[in-house]
Image (cartoon, rainbow, N blue to C red; front, side):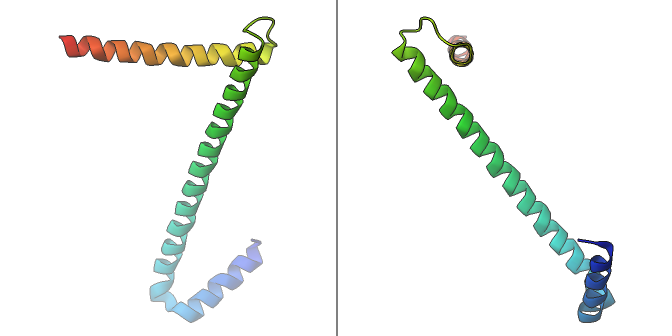
Length: 102
């Protein structure tokens, strides 16, 4: 929105709502906009994560089809990333089970 458009909106808001209710209305609209932005960012992050997981899954299938030999560099990277994730899960599971024993 340009400066003149913003001035016109504020003048119309001042006339319609009055000086007492205009600040409250501006705060309310501001909160709505911030909420919508945060929801949009959350959805965007979730979609990006799902796409990343899908790509890793696809690369793992390709690696399995090639019997894990002579893999392209991107597929090797995906396999190593999945291996690290599996190792971290094993490590955290082992740590939890060790803590339970004590």
